[in-house]
Image (cartoon, rainbow, N blue to C red; front, side, top):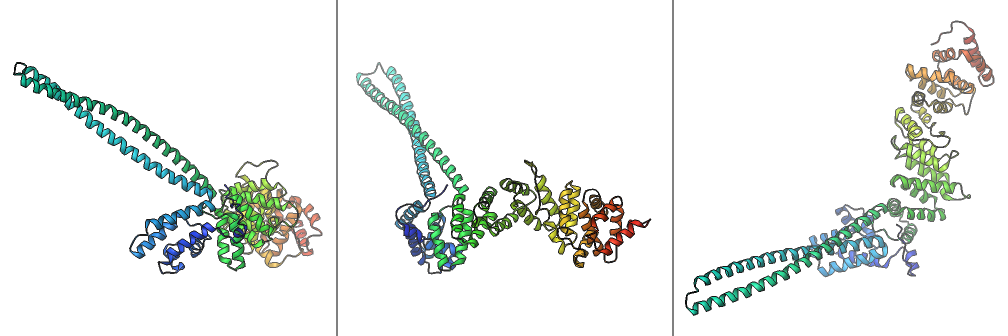
Length: 547
């Protein structure tokens, strides 16, 4: 639900980031606060809030919550040792409702419903008390009528016994009987009226209870709707933009950044998209990237993916669109990667891939960033395999480019890392992905006759970290699935990184025996002369050791 600023002709107020009703409320609260005799920073510390929240509430730049106001009143009462007058309370509450109506009509409607529900519950309670009182009165009258009937019956018995007495006695009994009969008739008529009154009271109570139920359901529905929207009481978006401009002009950058971060998670998604478009129109790349990053970190997954769709749409649009720039996408990628786990990576990866199509790279960049955050080979392997196999692929299946080769970038600090990942991928039946990593680790994409010795040595050390089973699986992959160019690149790294111990390289040559002639032909112009000569000599000499 989008909250729109009122169209009352006060465009200058909106441009300055002001809502008069909110400013008046802030003034009332600040006057009340000043009676405490402490600084706003001290007060913020006392009530465990950020000082900027307190400052904005008293400055009329943020809609305070009802709890904030009640807490302020309690603090003032505790400091004064007395109560804030009912008139002052009512004035503050009325001003709060007026400001709420202007800043957030949805919250105002909810607060009005809550007030109506409270009144309805009081009406229901009064109806309950009325029914209970009528029940009690009816029981009393019925008991009195019962006693009157009993007394009348006894009187009739007494009259029969005294029938032979003097006429004076009979007259007295006759008068008493008439009086009892009249009283009983009055009681019976009163009982009938009480029954009618009780029936009407029960009807009114039932209506009040039903009205309360309906109001409660409306309150719950609206609360749920507003909970989906985010934080309550946000000022209108256009006013918020004006406040940002004013803070930037005043070089109040920390508070502006806090407000922008709060907007990223608390405002409706439509407003966040509007804010992004506004910042992009201003060519404000820094704040666009910051907002995209905050959305990526803080919003629900569906909103994060909606932002991805917006970035991709702008990337394929006309040149110059800030939202389509790589730096902005990188901000989104980094933020989302921080929340990716093995359990949710498939959803993120496949959803973004579906948005961009097979030629896109955002999904791979996102996965690459997540893999680079992995601290163990098994974690990296889990992310890659889950991304590919965690859901049903669509169309022509899933592709993986940058994401799969992210692991090799760890080789500088952990040489065994990419090799463990490759071995795991081969074991999981994803040897093509293992090959993609091997291409990058072996520098096949930038071949050199003689690689830098430290680079080649790291390659060799990493290969040596594999256990026998993993090493055997990797060699089988190189022999049976890798093309000559990849095998040749691996041979270069193994030969120049061996540091005199060529046993592992000799084992590879032994495994390649059936295809070595084709390999030599393919590598004639790619290998250095000494490497080429070594291979020729080893494969031509019988009894070459395999380890």
